Image (cartoon, rainbow, N blue to C red):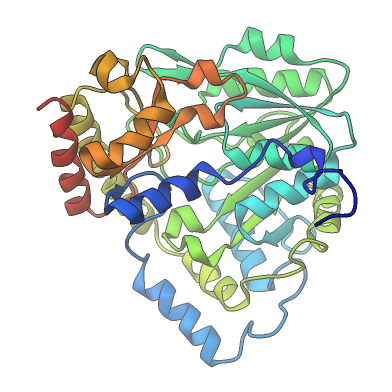
Length: 398
């Protein structure tokens, strides 16, 4: 029992309780439901990459503290990947920093770059750690809402421009976008770049789904646009691309000054992490283009399987151009099933009703009412698991 009446949790984090992912994963375990809520694969990535981690462990590489910025092999591999894929040249020694996944990269970047009261513009709905990290840094989040338009969620550039004030410090961009699956177009990214240059804003880009773009979509790093390399912190991750999410290996690429700033915060978070896995990810980034193409095609087939099943089950489906999530509108299921578009109630009832777990998108919104009828499903699962989930979901219209 505390000796004073002040709340134990500080006011910056008071609005953040147990995450919806923990709640829904626990519900999946209790009910035996198929968990299409949390975004992690149910199979491991390439055997060669896993064996590279085993070799590193056995050879004693990384079993003790690795270098603070990350092992040289991984920093060199990240720089080579950015050069090969996008023509972006980074110095492995001064412009690459290895982090404990993308989540730490986001936290360290915001802690390093924000002063209390600085405004951060982020696209709503946004990954829940964005809000928490902005709060921990003392910043003020300013949501710009992606809205449904012709089968996808799109950015209103006029709304973005009007959101910028004299207190705006940075833009937090996520493309491909979780949870909506939106991939920002060249025209949208050009406008964002021009706005950042005009208003002298820093930009943080979360690009962890860079290798999961479908159909005619193309991933274009914002740092490649005029005037952006010197003001952009780009965040990447091995977890989503190589299906080893538990390894928690991410990275930051930017200018020496920005990387040094981020490292100043990062060293007091984990300091270092994932020693042996860093060696394995260095090898993974050098895999031939065929791996990345096959990975994308496999996820595309799974996207189409689940999207078709959700449509048949009565949902309105927003087919994603990227990531491994599908956003749906539950209102076409009718008032009885959707409870007038209450995604929270729908997701809490779905495991008992159909044996499937999903995530209510409203948790990713400041404006909860804007996200109320939307529900997210993950398709990064084995084909037979998705097929079973589809059969169970059909009971909603049966």
